[in-house]
Length: 91
Image 1 (cartoon, rainbow, N blue to C red):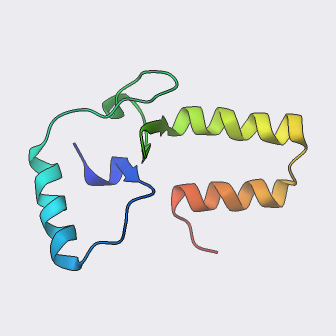
Image 2: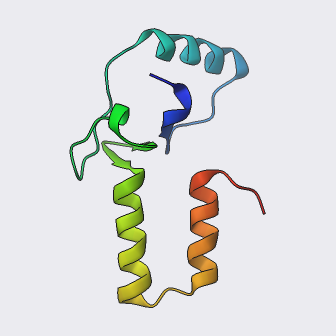
């Protein structure tokens, strides 16, 4: 499993040494992470966001964002900002 496919949120900041050890542990682990909404593993999606007790894949996140845009009339500039943050693009 690639470290860049699963993004963890809500975790406390780690030291560089802890981050390196965590990265090494993840490269040897082959246990998939499943989306809490659609049930797909991280091996079948573009990205997975891992939160405290819940995970969401990039596809389900996009569906949720589209719902917010259409139903709540979220400004498109704000939606683009969220998309850029999700995909790691700096403005």
